[in-house]
Length: 324
Image (cartoon, rainbow, N blue to C red; front, side, top):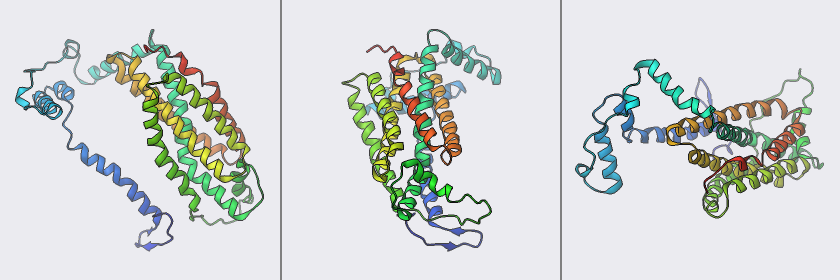
């Protein structure tokens, strides 16, 4: 509704365009979420760690909200720190010691293997998933421009690279192309509908099928999809594949998160999840950089590498030892 227009408003210091309006609208969910956070009470554990007496009040409020009973009927009369936390040194040294105590067990037996599996899978999932989501509008826009300017059927990578190949002379002044083709919005609609639908279906599917098997099948399918993308010449099926495989990878990542919470004990579970998130963000950064360096000149190699990595790691989820 916003990017499809071509209006422009001169505000003296800048030109207000549909792109700027779009980014402002994208900020609204974050602004709303930040406002709602103000309504949430502070963590009782944090209040207790800072010797704040309001910890019990917060627990009573949560109890009343969850049960519908009066806050005064909360059965706990007092709360105290754990012995380990009470005896831990104060200040920066205490914080570093606490972080170290929760981190080191992840890199020792028997948790080392699970740590490697969780971080590796999260790294690969986000390398493929987030990178594709970031570059999908640019890729579909390039394909749409090629289809408008040429009727010659070529494979996916030739379409993507054609815009760059046509500008071989660096001395030519090229005007920034700020026109967005309508085909760019189709993948976003598919992703917007497909992501929650796939996650909902996956939540029911895990009750019937082993999560490790689902992840292995989805990773294999994603590998085949990425490979098929490079062999196709029609934009519509290419777009469908480009939007489908990130959706499947998001389901795999959600299952990896649930497995991570299940296999690690409570005392190091939060640190395990944090480490998994760090590895996933690192995968996003590296994947984005690889795409930016290879999409224009080594498109075929890039997608073949993604397909190969997903295929080789498809058996990795079976290394998890789950209770059920």
